[in-house]
Length: 322
Image 1 (cartoon, rainbow, N blue to C red):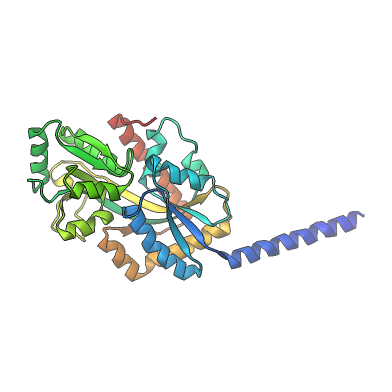
Image 2 (image 1 turned 30 degrees about the horizontal axis):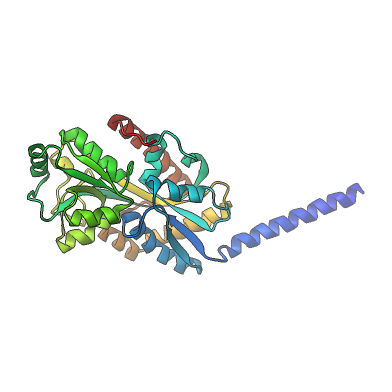
């Protein structure tokens, strides 16, 4: 009897291993949903759609972007946290995921605990943009304009607690500019009102503002990175005027906690191959993005470091959301 039981256990082990191996070899066998926690047209959406197309081609299955905006990024993130851990739901990870950990007094999830890091995608500077109709052409002139019009300048953002918001808060803190914060549900609506002149400045993620800068509807006063952006060599950094100012955005892919390692490894492998493609690098460069390839462990370190960094910025700004 013991011998039969042992043989049964061994047979079950072989079957499980075979099933696991087959799962890994066949994955994915259906459409993958990629949740972007912002409306269409913003940087996270633009970046996701570019990579999703390439990823669909490499996987042989559709990777479909689904926008779930609201709650300062939390609605989309919580959706993925609670999704089945089967490898068919992904999250477009972005700076808000690191910021919200300290910005919100209470969340229904713990991002570092509940999301599995899969792969880094890109890092981009933000860009300080104003309507082309605003009568200023430099960062210094904008600071002077703010101080000459106290209480009249509105600063848009893609949502409370986003890197776009905190980049502006950092600017306010370092310059003494008094600006009212107007949060939107994503960069798309904020850009629309900015171009219409209903708000006066936006520290936007570069990719979503580039087309409007090129069209002449927006004026770029400065990029928020330490060094000038190669795709915009004539645009100074904000730090050229405000000494020590620097802020960048970062993006990647996450999946629900407990997702099979085979799914993580497959998506990571294909994304790294996509980021190594010269055409993709060129496309990202046009949008101001610098690829950040690496292992899932590398991306986990990025998330941890950014969470700590922005936690300090949140504390310094005094910002909080119930």
